[in-house]
Each structure stands twice: as C-alpha cells, then as structure tokens.
Image (tube, rainbow, N blue to C red; front, side, top):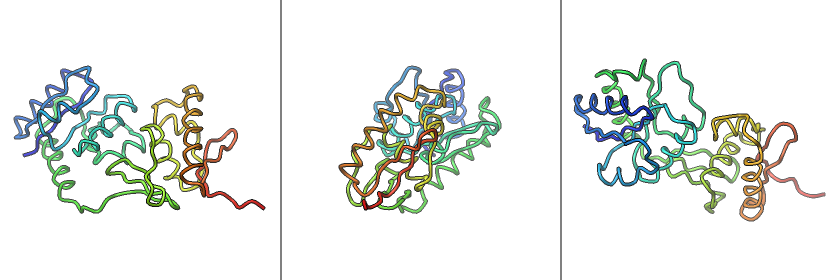
Length: 229
C-alpha cells in the first residue's frame, strides 16, 4: 500500500483523513499546521505522494505541487465535486481526484486514491510536456526550455510563461494570469508588470526570436518577432 502525506488547512479534518486512510491500509501522515516546506516530512516519511485537500489558496497549492515535483513525489489534489480548480492546478498536479465530500473520507475514496496512484506509477515513462515554437515546458520538472537551453526563471515567472506558451500566440488577459497564479483577478497589476518586464528581459537575451507583446487594455501574447523592414 502507498505511503502518503496529507496537506489540509483544516487540522481536525486532515488528521481524520490520515486516520481513515491508515485504517484502509495506507501509511498516512498529516502535515502539521503552519508548515512551509515539506522537505523534512518527505525525508522522515519517504512518501509516494502528497494528497492536497483543496482548502488552500491558489499560491499555496501551486507551491505544494512544485515542492512535490522537486522532491520527486506525486501530487494529488482532492476536491469536492462542486469545486472548480484552475487550469494551472489541473495541468501541474499529477492527478485530480473528485469526492462528494471531504468529511468522513470513506473506504471507497481510499480505493479511488489507490487506483489513481497505481495508474500514475505504472503509466508510460514518456515525459509529459507542452510545446510552442522553440519553447518546451517539461511538466515533470517545472522547467521551460528554449531549444536546448534551459531558461532561468523564478516560480512565478515560470507560471506566467507557461500560461503564455499554452496560449500558443493567443492573448492571455491580465485578469486570467492573476487569477491563475494569485487566485484573485483584482490584484494590483504592478506586481504582474514587474514579472512581465523581467520575463521580457530574459527572452531578449535567451530567446531572441520571440517576444512578449503587451496588448493595451487586454493582456499579453508570446509571439515570434517579425523581421524589420
């Protein structure tokens, strides 16, 4: 049976889920409240996966998924059937598991989680990724390449450029970027502008055939540069 870590903002529920999974044959441990890094818990428990209950803000969710990838463990996001999660979470997490209710995670859910983990573990070893032009996003390692060159990006820059690569030259609105990354579309755009400017500078050095265009009043697009007349 699988060894898992449980991440849930609701401490009582998280501990209850861990207990229920242990009764179903898992080796499950709840991450205590206030944790920022899962590294020492991964070292202690050597889990196969982290089960992330959809109770955190978007930024925290993406951070947990990113940490799991870097530590080479699977990430499963557990959400209730009436919940909607963002495109980034769905794409970056190894699996999304929908349940009727978080409360009283029953044996049937344990079987579903086990099936998902087994499927992922025995899936093809082919790296999943997204490509556009000369860009390739390695979703197993959260790395973006331009040709054979790895781009040196912060986690936020990675997420922004990933959205632009997925759009394949189409406009991605400021509201969508802020919603996907920060979980709110009314955020002061100054923070986004800073990251966009850094990304533009990186591309001007490392990916000179492409640029991030700013479309006034709409958003941004990753496009191939046109030759000067």
